[in-house]
Length: 241
Image 1 (cartoon, rainbow, N blue to C red):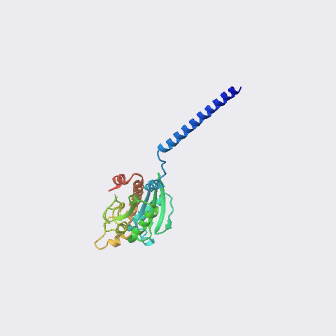
Image 2 (spheres, one colour):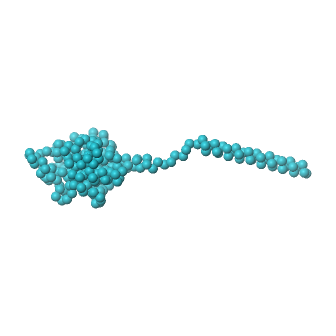
Image 3 (cartoon, rainbow, N blue to C red):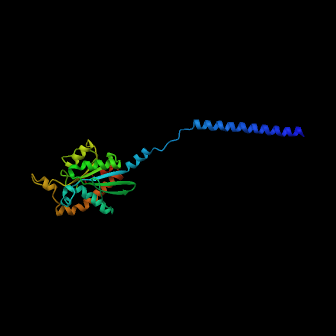
């Protein structure tokens, strides 16, 4: 009986010993697995923010504030953005250095800005909202008038000179260079010598007004294309049109 009990206890001891060995081996395997496993990848918030910012655009329409300038050729930047806002049922909000509204389309965010700084100080408002919204310069698009283009003709470029335009000149001075995208809307140079200021700050003729309806719709398409299809595709599709 004692032998039988010893035998039973002996089996129990061997069993316990085997279990201990197994547990030790498992522990070693677990430790080795932890040592050899690749490091845990932390979520890079800055990378996520970068991707988000690449889908966000600042569309700055240039012009002068106030009823006096509302329907002038020089205010075509404002007019293009007002047209987009109206047809997308958007409301403007008066904020620091301008009026802002936001258009969301197909995963892209278009922050539209009408600076309240007057044309000659446009750079201050553009730079402030670029920094505030963390928008890279390649996602900026400045909409402005151009005397050197026929009425209603478009020229979109990713960089260039100011061409003597005071608004573009100030943006270039504020950003430090001319490497920023711009959308020039032709207003033509149909004025006599010495009458440039009167012409630029003058109102559209009845004939121009009638043609503007189609041109503004085309400008809306160009702005949206810039964010959705990219600069190159947009330039190919709309420049000179």
